Length: 630
Image (cartoon, rainbow, N blue to C red; front, side, top):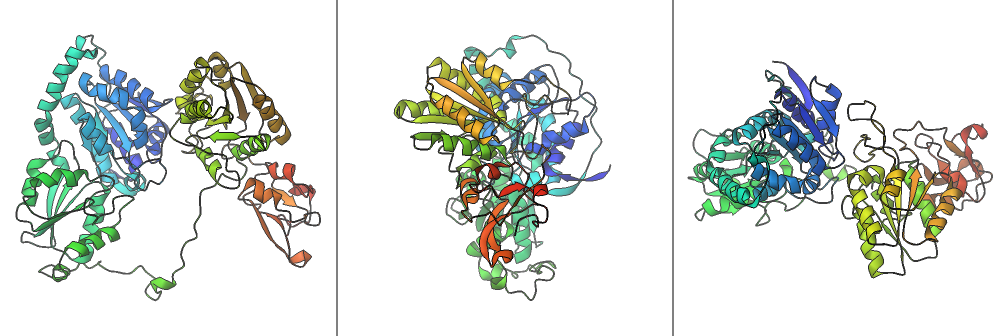
């Protein structure tokens, strides 16, 4: 079969397609997003693909497809698994018919998440099998195998790649595809209706099958002897991307070592682990996030030293690397055993990067810190600025939510006082108002998050007669994860026309009597709209409507008439737009004046509206100014 260069998430998509998947659902969340997007881009015949409004909905819809015999894939990130946990826990008791695979991508670091939670722990909690790929090649193979495993045991199977596996690229060999699994149809039966007595029997069945399930997953686990023909005395147990780091570190050190690579950590492979431990003098466990493998090994060690996260030899948080693993091995392994003891250093070990031989590490420049900021021309900056201006001088609390607009917490805007989880801005504001009745409580929520989990919070606010202002930042896309469509965009996951949900109409249907709409780039209108809402009581809403700059065509950039610039820095200090800065002007003897980076400026005009000297204008009105105005 052909070899094809694939990102890890793409490998999952191809694995599902080649396994005969016919239903794919999910909610975008880094680092999982590209898996569903790949299926949507390929548009395989007979495969339904959808961005669901949240992960719970995605899993429930996929369960329905599975009940009728379809093979189904659900995609999400690790915190999305929390949202899907309600159907997930019960689904293990009910069981499935068609293979059901749940991609839950973990995010060590975390790079783009609220938490570092470990899906393997969730698998233990739910008593579900979980596969832990260490590369795109394994992600492809494990996805295909997961459907078979799911159908064999009639159980959902979790697939848990971490960030580096999701976004790494490798040449993946595609195997002979399984023909599209045509759903056999739903067959009525009492087994699909969960009742306490059935759950009691199901729990006994779930526990009883675990030894058989562990044996079925044995091919995903393996033991290797590295750098020697005789049995090693040092062991490394690893899983996921930690396996790749461990192998690289061992080769760099020339260390004779035995490796236990666990690709299926639940149920824990005790028999293979005992075989691995036999004859070793010490064991290092290399895994990202929680000490799942380490905890599984501990009862089997019989006094043999076990090192990992529990004793601090391996970092307890953040991503790992080959260098970190190498340092850990040097900590626990006698120096005489490294690059010696019967093992030769690999040819590539310690080989410097080309061109770096003459550069001392102390002389290498440290990359500058680049904190994330709202994009130049982002409508959320305008919305935050308008509300901040309107609320000036009053006690106000600004509750945020999950999305790119969370970046409104950074100076100079300082407009996100709380951020908990998807949809929580609306509900946290309700509790804050009850505890602090003198405050004006604003709840900022994006359009995609509003559909995901904001509507129930709004209904709760109306029902319980809350006093708050819901601010929906409608930029017509799911901006943070790559501009995916949602029910308010009028487009489906595969680019087809879809019914367009009106946020204003939904708010009114939920009982919000006062709903206003405004363009945040019309600063005075936006401020006045906010003032009007603040003067009312009860649940009221403002919908700020302006498209994400990544989906809207930018206008002509702005420029500075430096002859009129007073150097007051109001534009920079109030907005924090990355296109704005202050620099010495060579034309005016080094006087510090405003400067606009025309490569970044989108021409939104927000800075021009707040400039006290009116020195900022569209670039075509300032011919000969030199663009940025210096």
